[in-house]
Image (cartoon, rainbow, N blue to C red; front, side, top):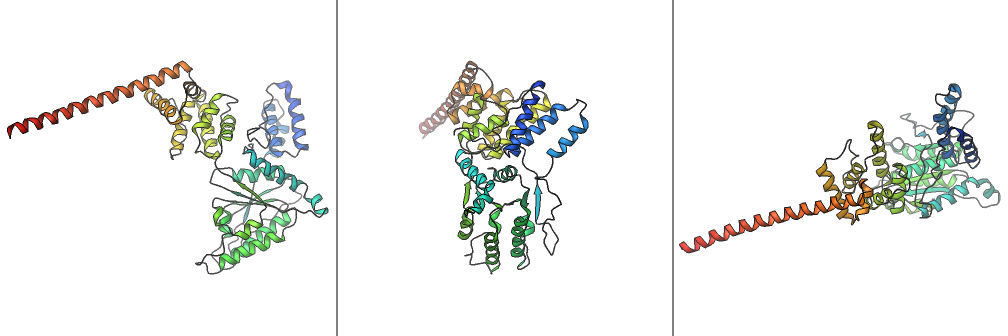
Length: 415
């Protein structure tokens, strides 16, 4: 996967010594000139942390306030559109994400081109090569669709607007279509990035025999509003059910990303980043045993383990992470437990993981933070226990079978 699918900032490593602060400032300026605003936020946050307690109170507070701002600076407040009947706001503005975006290399290629065209939209239009900046993200929950949309807004230095489809979809005839037009008219004048999550709610196929005409009106209004957008407007849609979308809607979205579950390389990068494992072998082995987990699942399990570590003051216990991974891959999502695993449970977990994923003793050692020899001893003792249990069960079955045969012989003699 080349760089492992890391986007946004390539996970900038912060300098650790006080005299290296000027290097951080240089990186901060460089990130600003490159319009890499995710990196600007992280480097700025590191500077805030570094000057804490250095009698620089007001400067630190001002920098902290800037970093917690809500998107690009604007000269006047923006009035968000609202439903005319309920007065409910149709859009909410969210802050840019503060974590890096990690994605598959093939997706990175598409996203890099999208960002390049968005940055050059005016030049392309002047040359008669105007582009349509509409991107659709499809795939199961937890694969990073919202994070990707927020990342795009940050890279383009634009406000990040998320449509509230619970307010957009109205029970009143005709109001949903009107609200959809208001959404697209707003993004036309705001200069922000509009994110339409659960897009199939307003973009379903128009051949539903049970529809009384309202769905067709909504989709028609959506198509017309999309066609009126100028070359600078950025609209990002997301759906868990791409098969439900109307074919005409697909034609309005030239950029498309299928956000499926992460592959092995991306899983390794996710574990490495969120558990702060660096290039440790444990990240690679965790990637092997978490093949059915989403990006969100991995993030939540890893961060929960680090929170437990911070609260307890002890290092991250990878054995509890493994237990959570096994449960997640079995269809039951749990967070890592607090405290150590009981010895018997730990032994069973090592054997189970090794058997399910064909792990060598070195892999088991890396995963459970023990030596290869310790892993071999643990797996060997586990096999001996199994053999002993199987042998005991076999003897019991033989004795029981012999008793039944003996009784049968005695009965036959009496007859």
